[in-house]
Image 1 (cartoon, rainbow, N blue to C red):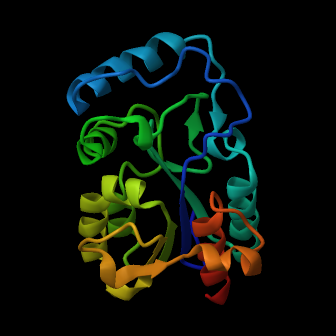
Image 2: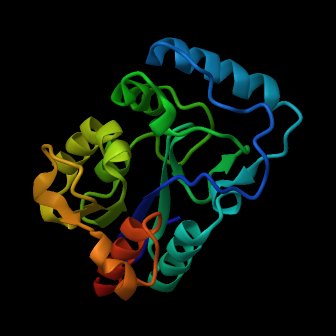
Length: 215
């Protein structure tokens, strides 16, 4: 499917989901390599009798519903940075799961590298780099907390190099981020919550949606 408008909205995964994770809970581990292998086995063992749904059907809550509505309204493709499954398109098949970078005690970048170089499930694009290499003339708006942004930082830096215009990448986050993506950053702050009609959980996403609407 072609995105005629050349717009992409990328948000982080949400804790709130429409179905219970069951036994698909990210394991405790000392390093990304052992965590990934244990997680791969968990998903393989517990997914045999599980009917897959799409990522768009799995996530719920204000953060997700507003993103989905804005993507539909603007014609943007909707993507997810998932701590448990990597980069997902809203139409990619998934199973319910529970995972967050905030709970992982090892290097988040190493985990993201595992998820994007060794995808655990079927997906449209395996990484942000692959996505932007395929669509170098498109515009991308990302909403991510500093924790998720740092996890995907190397992938994003590589992805940005594939774009014909580096400024066609806009990343909304909070002041907790400092790094090589700073030229593409738009900072959200608690002072915006009232005007955006949101709470802190949905702040980055709602600000990103405001930016997306201008395109």
